[in-house]
Amino acid sequence: MNIPQSSNSDRNRGQVGIGTLIVFIALVLVAAIAAGVLINTAGFLQSQAESTGQDSTDQVSDQLQVVEVYGTGTAGSPGSVSSLTVEIQLAPGADIVSADSVSADIIAGSSTGTGSVDFGDGTLEQGETGTINSFGVSLDGGNEASVIIRNEASASQLRYQFSAPNPISNSGDIRLDQ
Image 1 (cartoon, rainbow, N blue to C red):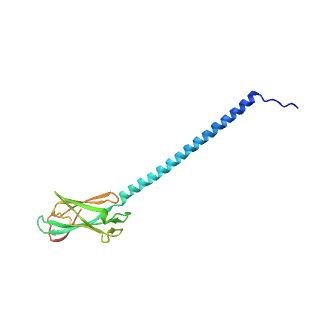
Image 2 (image 1 turned 90 degrees about the vertical axis):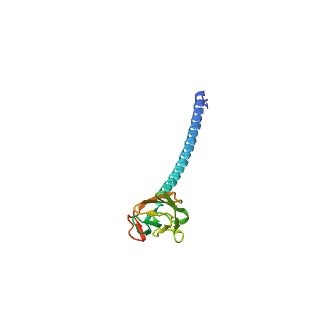
Image 3 (image 1 turned 45 degrees about the vertical axis):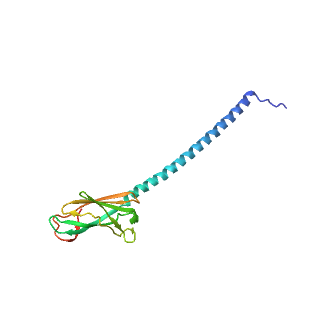
């Protein structure tokens, strides 16, 4: 029985097949590594987007709203209002706010004062109202003023403008309009 001898061309074809297999395996490994990098990057970007979205929502929704501004009036023409009180509440959807994280300033003409925050038990929750009192600034009848309320926990700020009536017709509690 004669066994055919393999030719040189058959050996070359076998070597080419092994080389192709090695190149194919290398391509699969590179593609797997690239896919892993893409998946990792996508996960990082998703978590970053969620964090940014939450920060944006907090800045918009964790706000305070002014319910009413009033003070003690001294009748006269124009008269004046002192001992200002700003009544505030949480905006819809806002989280509980600690009195320690809230500060307020009032600007009335060239006078500026700071208010003391009173939330009763120290926090303000949905449905509750708190006050900011005694700015140490008086407002003459017919003049405008602004209160700036900052919530440091969410980095939000509210500017609320109001004015005193002119003339102030009675002494006692007077509501100041926006």
